Every structure is written in structure tokens, then in C-alpha cells.
Length: 461
Ligand code: URP
Ligand code: ZN
Ligand code: ZN
Ligand code: ZN
Image: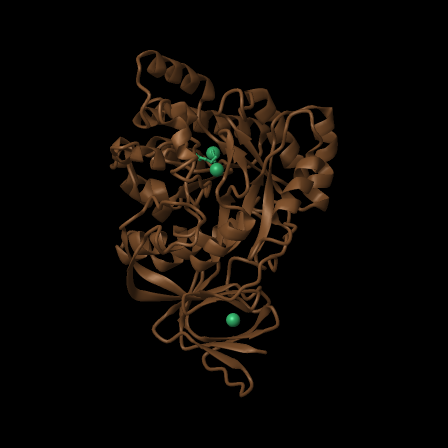
């Protein structure tokens, strides 16, 4: 049945205007001042914003990491995402050295297929560079539509690659029309700082942050950008946590380099003192890069506002406090890195950003949806409200006040890092390809309805 979203204020990355939206099948077919169609189902959006569905460009679902597996898989993670207003994710497909890339991609399809509640795509991790990888990449990028490749400059002896691998990947990616993404931290230096901390008996969660200072992030960010410049290839820096790294991106962009950056809501609202919470609670805030001194937050907001950073990903990578985070009770290096973040990304960015006057509505939509769609080859199918686009839509009530909590969230995990935080605004109706997934706080989607999206090549340059 056709649907009309009626009476709301439509907000895209560029516009804000009053309009009704007509949805037929999976698509937006008309946008006009007033639309009447007797047989259509009416979704009342009076007093609400009508946003494009959120796109989370950074998730880790059903991922083995730190000696365990993330608490949320594609079913629970995408359901929580939908409640939070996110209708598309791009998840990281992990590869293993010495094994065909195809094996990894097939495995990720198996994890998602039949379980995902929203549409999804994959980035591919590059763990080594050799003839086998070079031979396989064209098929992966061009036939699977996996048009982004991720490398880790940290996690020594686990995921970390050397500079040669990064440089070769940048060169190949440019040729194939893919965007390279990096986790930018200097893993070698971190490893030495960690050894020293442990030798000195500093084993608590706080030392996770102490041993990964802003300098190691800024240095790796600058190094990655330099290699991208040498290869004349575009690069995207994931989860930028601090002013020092954001400034590297800002300077590079001012020089005309093809550099983009992502931050995450945790870096915008939480800080290093959270790692000092007693009773090992600090472990709930262990992720890499770590939380920073509070003053960095306003710098990150400024970077979003002035366009130095373009996206906000969640870096969803959830582990239960009981039974997973506590693997590192006596040694912070054994705490699995990551947190439950997929659900509250959209609302935190709205509440702390738009509601508190730090960013405007268009910047919000760009950061939470449109820019990721453009950078990762999903636009205009995803990431905007336009005739012909998928009807992925969030009807958002900007006046509701609520409190974030593990007792009400939908992630499959026993804590929420934003426990007790008050936010203004709530996604009240969430549609994915014209289907109501969330309404009246109830989930109406069907497990497995989410579709794999083969993405377009990188086209920003
Ligand atoms: O701590 C984090 N960020 N965990 C997820 C893996 C990664 O580095 O993105
Ligand atoms: Zn990372
Ligand atoms: Zn991540
Ligand atoms: Zn229903």
C-alpha cells in the first residue's frame, strides 16, 4: 500500500522545507507541498523532522576480536540500529593472511544473510599485500561492489599492516575505484608503551588510554595522509578521536588533498576520566583510539561544523561487561576493545549537536547519513530524501526528552556507555525501503529482510 508521510519538515544535507512524501513500493515517488491519495496509509509527521535514514559507515557485528566474539550479531545489531534511526550499515569484513579474500567475503555474507533487519554492505579489511590479493581485488571491488578497503596501522601482531602494504593498497585502490580507510594509530609505539606500563604494574583500564596518547594517533594520521598523497589516492580516516588528528586532516584538506575523516559519538561526549571509574567500570569505556581529555570535544564539533570531518560512525563493537570485558580484570591489554554504540549514534548527534546549537540540521544529516552515502557509493539510492531514492526515512520528534539506558536499549549487551544521559529527540517512525520497521516503540521488521548492497565505485574525485 502507498504511504504518505504527512505534515513534517523534510531535512536533507542541503535543504529544509515543509512537504509531504509519497512512497510506493520501496521508493519515494513524489515530494510536494500537499499530497492526497485516498487509499494511502498516512504517517503523521506533524511537529516532526523527516530525515533520511541514518547510514552507519562503521560497524563490527558478529566479529571475533580480543579472544571473544562481539555480543551483537547482524540480527540484534541491525534491530537496535533501526530503533535508533539507522537504516543502512557498512560492516567490516575481516580477512586472514594466507586465505583468499573471497573466503572472508563469503563468511560475512553468511553472517548477515537471513539475519539483517536493515540494508547492509561491507568494507574489506586488507591484512597483507601480495600477488594473490592483487589478483583477487578487482573481482571483489568491481563485482561484489565492495568499494572500500580498510587497513589497521595498530593492533600489532593482530591486524597491523606495515607502510608498504598501505602504500600498495592505496595505489591499487585508486586504479580500481575504491576508497582506502585507515585505523590510524602507531601500533609499534603503542606496543612499547604498553610493555612499559605493565612492567610498572599499571594494569587498570585507564592505562589503555595512557598507552595510546594523541601523538600516536596524530602521527599515524599524518603518515597515512602522506602516503595517500604520494599515491595520489583518496583516503578516509576512521574514528578520529582528538584535535591533534583532526588538525592533520584539516591541514591536508586545506592543501587540496583527497582526505576525509570520521569521528564517533563517544569521542564527542565521553572523555578519558570515564576510564577511571571504580570497580573496573572503566573497562566499559575501553576502545581504540581511546577517549581523550574533554577539551578535544569542542574541537571535534568544530571539525564537523567546518567540514574537516564529514561523517559520524558508531564503531559498534559490543562486548558484555560480565564475561567479556572482564577478561581484562587484571590486565587492561586483555579487555576486548569496543562498545555498544550503534543504537544511540543518531540521537546523540542530534541532541548534543543540533539541540545544543553546535551544528545545524543540514550538517547533522550530512554527518549521520548523506556524506557516508556519497563517500561509500550508496548515493542517491541511500542518504537523501529525493524522488527515486529508497524510502529509508526517519520521522523524528525533536521535543521528546528521554534517558539512555541499558534497561531500555535494544542492543544485546549488559551495559550502555551513555547510561543515564538525557537526550532530546527521538526517532518515532523508522522506514526502510518503504516498510515501517519501528513505530510506537515496537519493532515491525522481519529478520532477514535487509538486503546486501553492492556499492558504486568511489567518485568524489
Ligand atoms: O576499540 C575499537 N575501536 N574496537 C573496534 C575495532 C576498531 O579498531 O575499530
Ligand atoms: Zn579501529
Ligand atoms: Zn572499528
Ligand atoms: Zn507491524
